[in-house]
Length: 352
Image (tube, rainbow, N blue to C red):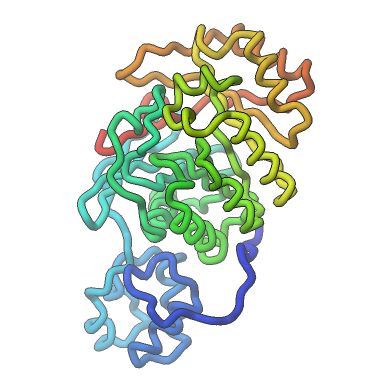
């Protein structure tokens, strides 16, 4: 799919572009090289070197004059270092990436027959503390910058030696608590890396007012909302922040999102045996979503050591699916990849 603009362009380029350079547009890079006393066309050379050749140092760009390369060698591009990689039996690879301040994040490359998907992190840790999720057990350190998000995609692409086709913002962190960097990285992934908007997915557990704000950008991405429960009481047991954001308010905001963007929402629902996987709970979920332009992704629970939730049996999962289908709710089951490498949904944690 071709790269399409995320926002309208006004041809203005900010002169205050400061390194790291990753995440900058070709226009911004062209302006920057001119500030260094070089011709504008070197901006396109720089853009190609960063996004398509994978250079990690400006000193390695051979088309640049040798003297200038020496002058700018210390200017950071913004690439991470790979501390560790773990390969699962299904080909999924989990990466532990070291950032400039020595923080560690995780990203996951998920290959299939016709695509390569990257699951990116947006924060170091996560403040949401969802009960079933390993990331939230480790607390929160800081937001990631746009170059640190884009870098994850380039890292996976280089390691697989294969073009990344899809990116899901479902790694460590809550994307809508880091909206500025997420929007900037979406723009760069679309325009600079060349990934179509409809191949980009942003996941959120729901932050009051943020889905409505996100809708105003009118992107063609997929929004995935983590529900995990069909009612407020059950949701509060799993997601502490739900106490401040009633389910009804969240769903109303989701309806506004659909109305503004004309894009359906994907609702994520982790199935926990004996907790939220009963047929009557499926019926309750269907009632919440009736008349909604949406799709439900059921995710059988992936175990972590801190809690003793269990994954439902396949029969129990199918019974849940059957109820939703009978109620005319679009649904699919997503068995997470990378389970053996602790790279599956809900298993990511810094430095593990």
